[in-house]
Amino acid sequence: MSPALLAALVVFVLVFILRMPIALGMISSAVAYFLVKGGDLSLVINQVVNTYYTNYVIIAVPLFIFTANVMNSGKVTDMIFKFANAVCGRMRGALAHVNILASLIFSGMTGSAIADAAGLGKIEIAAMRDAGFDDETSCAITAASATIGPIFPPSIPLVIYAMLSGTSVGALFMGGMIPAVLLAIALMIYVIVISRIRNYPRGARFGLGAFLAMTLKALPALLTPVLLLLGIYTGVMTPTEAGAVAGLYAILVSVLAYRAMGLADFWKLVRDTVQDVGSTSIMIGAAAIISYIVAREQVANQLGAWILSISADRNFFLLMVNVVILVLGMFIDTSTIQLVFVPIMLPVARALGIDLVHFGLVVTFNMMIGLSTPPFGMLLFITSAISGTSLKGIMREILWPIAAMIAVLAAITYFPDTVLFLPRLAGFLK
Image (cartoon, rainbow, N blue to C red):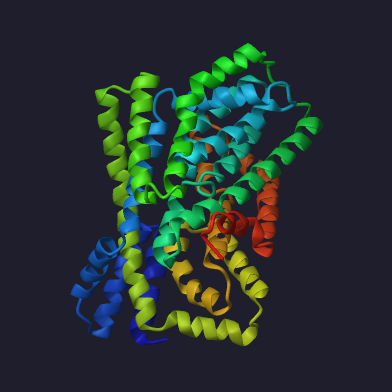
């Protein structure tokens, strides 16, 4: 390790220990590197600017963030929840199933676990509380089901991964469909078991007329993912253009179909989006500098040579990656893992012949588990805050849903066709 790289690492660790923003830590590390190396600090600025100007796909990120914020306003989330409630009907523990189904539907509109937990989660937890569920279980299921969001298309983390790896966004989106459905099924199996053990209440019965009426009311919102995915897979729109169309359609749905957004609401929505995009952009820019340093110091090559010296088996490598990300996810924000750790692993994955669409879904799925893992899972803090529930209780209840998520992770890791079947069927992959 060169003195410059060691200085950068020391600065990054200090910033992490002091609990300062990770983006600031990455920028400070880069500055320390160039100061010790004696390089030109203008390279830092050039690297950030080049990242934004040479990646057309990155424009999709603010567009999907905007769409998520629109869908989280007004009656849209309420309509999705009521439709899911009508579908689940008289099942035991019905509202827990509604929670999972609503998250699967909502994920087709936003691609954000945070948006799901913060918006739809408020409705889900309140309804489950009124139906007799304990708050800890309600929050745990809400946190676990929210992880479906970034796996089912569209997905903000998958767009960022496409930027990092050069992989097709359309192939990644299609590759996420089966894993997302498998996760929803695994969580529903968990709900069936605990509902029988704890005798959770059944849902209300919906007649055919009431079901059809609810479906018609929810139809404008339900058409959002259909419009978005058809636009991408028919070739009419790029993922970036689809993000813009989805944002515009979401506004029309909120204003015209549900009359849930006024001018003041729209202005607040724009401000929230600018704040979200600003923080995301800083992270991406800072990560671009770190990626430049990693490439300059040949860290990826050295790490790859070390891993290959231990074993050239791709299953062993995937096991190592999964274990490392699961551990990192307990303590570090997922965006940091994706922007710093993943680019180092990509050359090794290529060298071992691992399909990068498969690798992208494995990594993204694993990172989403990190959002729910104690002690620092972001979704645990969000559900605790919006419900006023003890964080300790949520952490206790989340353990079995995490086990279900890890089981699905193992399935998509060692059975690549669970990810690659649909992209191959659609002609994205050979």
